[in-house]
Length: 464
Image 1: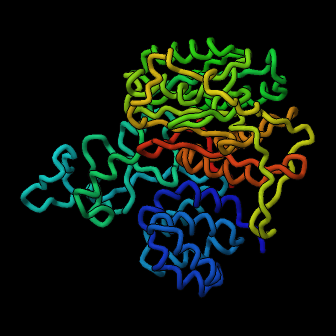
Image 2 (image 1 turned 90 degrees about the horizontal axis):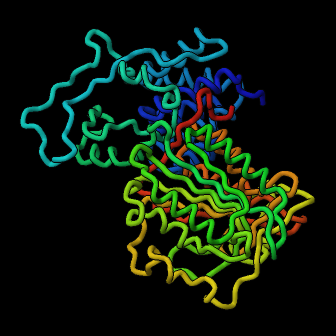
Image 3 (image 1 turned 180 degrees about the horizontal axis):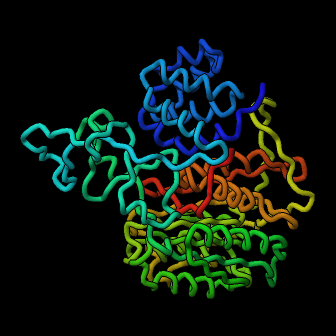
């Protein structure tokens, strides 16, 4: 099967949000089957993928893999199944932009009177009138407002599940959202992430230890993540080879800063680690003096109680360290289930044997380490490995986790939310093998309340 023209792939990717808004895959499935673009099994998988929007997203992703004839056949299906406006839009870009599909033309979306989300139970008495944004024209896609045209190019991107919803008023077409309650729900699904800079990012990179082995390759991880978060519009600070007390001082200093002008805060910890007792977040990272700092304590520095200016804002922790000293040999699966990827010849562990006593991990002297704290909100902790297991690091290429986290952020930050990207990282890392035997499974503890989309750098696109 010939591959789809890269130009057609880009047209589908750039217009993904418009397609997902209106397309019901069930209405065109018959035509796609008739033309041989999809098999019945493939259509069944698309149907099982979730909501109508989820099905539409999956259909577009699968369509990009169905060869050179898939795009024109898709346009024919749209035209024959009541989606002529959508077909015309895609066809116009296909004809007028042979190499670089242009921006969406200004078009209209009929809307109803905005609803005050502070009083969603109060629906205006008279039936709201349908008002086009630009009288005299008719189309199904929203035109960018003058303010949007002037915004920084970082915010102009296509996301697979982005909800561009105002914090105060939510004008929505009746066909897309017929219920005021649904409007209220939509308005709370995405974190505000448009501050410039977006937030502060602290990277602690421990490489040279006194009593533990040095972590060769960690500088590679540090450089990758420093560049990546700068590209995502964060102010990045790097600290190297910190002792336990110095780690706590850096976190305390970060918590005392005024974050009111920012939308997010990121902490990256690259060090040795171990499994410790906990009641919320497992694991600990070591200072270069071989003294541990529990992850639970690390997150407490930035919770809503100890850092008021970060209340209701996402606080992200990325930890490249072992969760324990157990090596995971995995389990046997069908060859079709995964695509095995061998690890490097110089793979090392970030593991330190689990402490037999919790005395050295006592946090009773810390004012913010209270067992009675409420469950934290707006916090996500991403671990390079499952609690209790080792984390693998290539001395020449860096750790499996950071290498893939960096790549997936680069390729997908323009279109995917953070949790989705972390699942991609999990999938890729889980298929690696150290020394042909040992496995690794990243994971996260997620207390976020909304979708989180980073500010993708200008020109960033999803991979073809």
